[in-house]
Image (cartoon, rainbow, N blue to C red; front, side, top):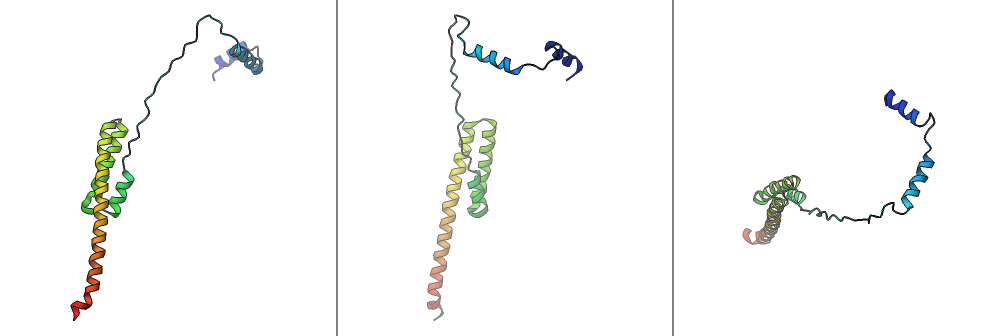
Length: 137
């Protein structure tokens, strides 16, 4: 605060600190009192569109990329998830939904195919293990 504004404050209050209680009471009286004019009170309602939450499936895609990356579907899903997040940050919700839908389909495909590969591998190992004694004779 510079000297000019400080001098103005001191001159306006007579060198005394302002009386905050008095100001508060005056405000309450004017707040609770009747309207001063005969004008009617008008209200305005503004409907704000709610933010549409678009899931981008980044975590699911990252999981599929790291653990169940069948034919690189998890990595491709991760790329689409990042594109979806970028579109969402820009404000293009339609583009974000399109990329998110593609990422979701790729994640489902990667998950199903990876689980099928695990099941097929387990069944193959069990069949080979059970038939191994027969093959040696």
